[in-house]
Length: 226
Length: 99
Image (cartoon, rainbow over all chains, first blue to last red; front, side, top):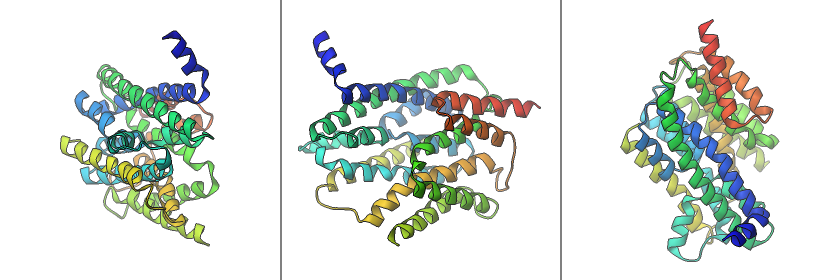
C-alpha cells in the first residue's frame, strides 16, 4: 500500500492532479456557503455538485437565483457557460475509454481542470491518467467541500449583512481571470462587459448576460475569420 | 432553485459533455465553431460580473457591492486564494454598507 502510494506520488501528473483536486475543494466550500445563502437546502446543493458538476455554471445558477432572477435565465446562463465542456470533450476524445459505459462515466468528469491537466501531458498514457486522477480528485473534493460549505453557511446567518451577495460577482471575476490570459479572449470579455452594462436599463433582467455572451462570441468569431 | 431546474441543469450540462465525448471520433469542429465555444465562457462570466454588481432591478446602481467586487478583483489579480478573494469582497461590501 505504502509502495503504491509512493509510486503514485512520484509521478508528477498524478500528484499534480490530486493536489489540484484538493485546491478545488476550497472552491467547493465557497459554493456550499453561497448556495446556502441563496436559500438552497443541503440536499439540493450537494445534488447540484454531484449531478451538474461544472463549477462556473453552478455559481451562475445559484447567483442568479440569489438575486431574484427568473429560473429560465438562471438555466440559460448556466447552460451557455457549460457549452465549453463540449469543446473540452472533443479535445479529449482520443484518450476516452473504448467501451460505452466508460465513456458515459468519463463524460461527467470533463471540466476545466481535468481537460487542462490532460492536455498539458505529452504522452497519451500520461494524458489519460492525468484526466482520470484530476477528474476524480476534483469530483471528490468538490462534493465534500460543497457539503462542508452548506453546513458552514448555516452558521453564518443573514447573508446580506455579511456582504455575501457581492461574493458572487467576485467569484465570477476570479473564475474569469484564467480565461483572459489570451488577448482575444480579454477583448471578448471586455466587449461582453460593455454590452451588459449598457443594456441593463433597457431589457428585462436575465437578457443582458445573454446579449453580452452572444454578441461577444459573434464578434470574436468574425475576428478570427479575418 | 427548484428540483426541476436543478434536474434540467444537470441534464443540459451532461448533454454538452457527452456530445463531445461521443462525437469526438467522428466530427471535427470548424475553427469558427471551436472559437465561438472557447469565447463563450469569458463573455458570459464578464456579463455576469457586470449584472450582479451593477443591476439594481433594471437600473444601474453603483453601490457597496461595486466596492467589494473591485477589491476582490484586485486581490484575485494578485493571485490571492479563491476563498480569500470572496471573503474580502464580502467583507468590504458589508463594511461600506455600514458607513
